[in-house]
Length: 152
Image (cartoon, rainbow, N blue to C red; front, side, top):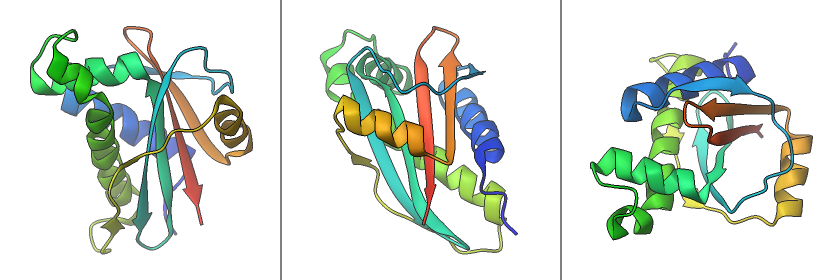
């Protein structure tokens, strides 16, 4: 039996953000309303189970993440240009760590390519409201991050 669930996702996501980007998080409450421009990426996975992992943040957080990972200032044009890519790379790291935590090291897992996936506010709200495994985190700088784990 796998540990592919909300609790494991929350633990792995928080630990990966902290270790890879020095971003500290606290649990939040998933709410459907985003009142700012969002950056959304998803990645597919296949191991003992298969599915899709989504990461939703503000566009501003994505730029700050890129700056943090690349050692740049948030107003640097390179950080601004690479925000969504940095979010995708963080999702890739989280998904890899989630696969190990859920399935162990003896299972071969395949990860897809992180893909930017714009959704309308209505589509995002519906996805958050219907998700069986959704978590929300608040960073130490008050950025909201939502993650959705769809198991197929």
